[in-house]
Length: 320
Image (cartoon, rainbow, N blue to C red; front, side):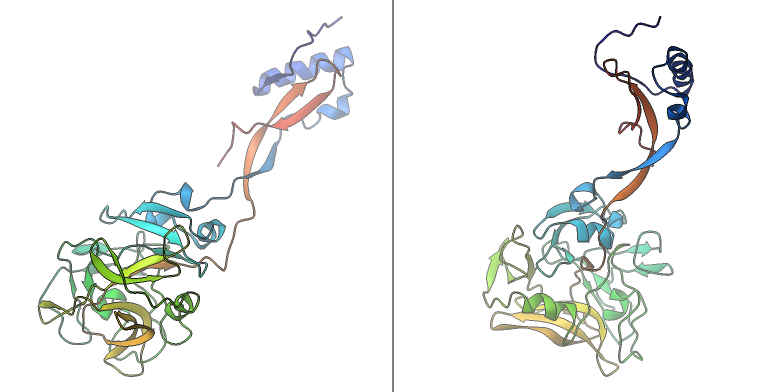
């Protein structure tokens, strides 16, 4: 007679051992044979939903990850293209935004790491802000102000002078990110409408405005008044200009977010040849993961008290 010591249930994850146990249980009559027919299959289980706190690089971001995150959830992510780090926060509009201005320059970006369909080179040329189709970018080393880009560069060459409506289809944002839309009804306008604060603030000795809320933890992001770059020089620090993906109704203009001490215009207009700041965002209102399906090997469990044989998923044996 088979004797089983009355202790905690016995588990083993070896397929061969399970077969031997199955034979013994059949012989000893612990369970009927029909209960053993599926003794070693795989099953699906639900894993925890991934949020901002579960990723480390900008390129891992997806709309589902943003959607799963809470308003005010924040983390620091690395852009693998140049190893720059950015604070990322889910703002009160439900989308995830960069907390600092983009500062990538002097790099060739690719569809594997950026919001592009073909390779594109971002220069670092202070004297090339001339004409509407100029590929121009300049970074002076100030991490709070970031780099300055022409609209052609910002849109990775898809925003050209001849484009007088609609949105550019690419950008120099990391893969998984994009430019905000502009104009009335654009995403800058929506973000501002949710928190139309008129306060002029100072963060890290830089003037600017909070959008979304007055702190990161409440779902806000600070936009410094970084000025603009043109004609080989930086102008009008104390004025903020941020590119959108939306072209205006002529060859020389595109929509921007404009902010100064006296007010803010989330549907402003800027010249495509000028160097303005860039903030990237990820949609968070369109997709959420309710569960994540994974497969795991089943584990045979014999209850020594009730003599019941059961199969359980082993959480330590997740198969990606």
